[in-house]
Image 1 (cartoon, helix red, strand yellow):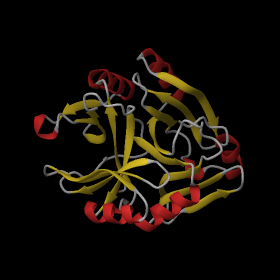
Image 2 (tube, rainbow, N blue to C red):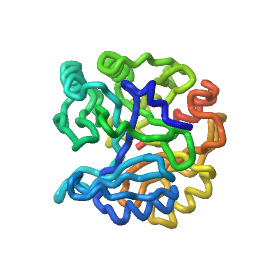
Image 3 (cartoon, helix red, strand yellow):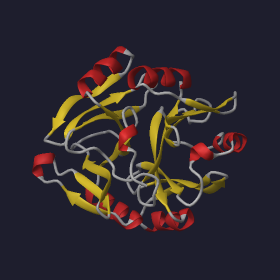
Length: 278
């Protein structure tokens, strides 16, 4: 479906990959999802835009030489004023990893780390508004914040980005809320404090849609990626946790079954409680 542009303020509008091996990542994602890749040229630092047909779906750029940061996907939240958003986020306890910067005529961005330790970006659109499709094969189908401090995370994003969380479950075993306009939920917040390995911090996680998760998992391994968790099926779809060849983590999600917000809460708690996130 078309991306919900009218409801994006404070919601995910883009995701891009920071990779240590641009050619290898380009081959992996174009073959896995059938994307095409367009290089922006020197003016924009050779930033790569992935497209599904004519629709922009994700981006990619190279790690700085000598960087010790792990390869990872970053989720960007839409804002009307990047500088104001950074000021508000800093006041609410966030760290600023990259100060606001203008990206040509495309827009203005910044990179933050929320008070629970999860990095994310903010994007103030000018000519570029973000991904053009959502919920289809070859496009983002969900964004999820897996946090070690659930209440603090909800308070932060509510204060800074105007979120209005919808609680799906609030038990000791499973706490989860969704974010988005009615009928267009696009983001989840999971209390992962008891489920993340000690070495894994809070983080945003990208879900990318495929028509057949089992077939996609086979392709992931053929292309040099890793299957962290084999496909599992719940009432709300089929999923697999995988990495690309250099270790960037993402989730494959089926597009022919209900999205996460439509799941049965009891079943969701049972499924997600042992999800090896990260």
